[in-house]
Image (cartoon, rainbow, N blue to C red):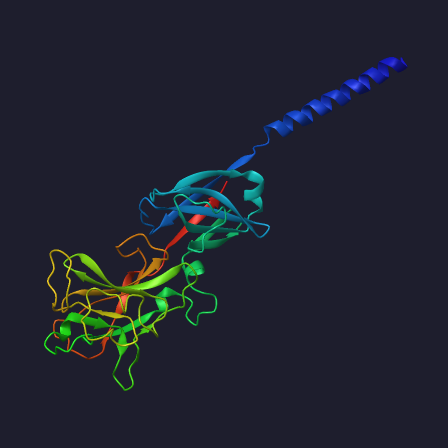
Length: 299
């Protein structure tokens, strides 16, 4: 009788272990992360987007993508996904030897339950900036060509400064950008955007102030972003020209940037009025894309 009892207990124990093993084997190791984002554009062949979840303060990759049609779903470790507190989207080299996220982070948002609302202002704007959103940006510019000695072509240059009261001051009031991003000015000529130069601060000249092929031969211009379109015009255009009726744009660009076209983020834009006067301040308006948004869902 005792032997039968012992054998019965052993059988129950083996059955319990077997059931426990079956339960463990049926527990999914991966879960779905779905991205539904608005406003992203193709990065070309040299760069990709990469998603990251923050788990215990550390970034964990959720995968890369180039296609910007959404929603898209990625398979991620279920344990890590359930513990994630934040989602971040970065721009990475297509061939990337560094396993860590790049500085160029375009979207981020904290998980609240099983979803996170993500926004570009959470990543692009430096935490110490006095302006917290690209929607807060304002701009002024003048028409002038200070890089040559010819007064007959003043409508062929645009400079982002305010000379309404001496001395001239910066014409752009922009949030300070986080690492991995720069501003860039543009003038759109019959559908073709031509850069005025990239810059980090509206208080100083842009990066190509001394090297621009379009400017005149008498100097680099004032110490603010801008450009004179006086020579070496691209095919199909003629410089000097008249910027009246052209669209002036300020964009936010990834840095480094592999594209000669403006990035999707354009916080400021303005069509130069037909009656615009040279050397006179003109106010810019809101651009077509001030933020990129979306949602991230874990299942």
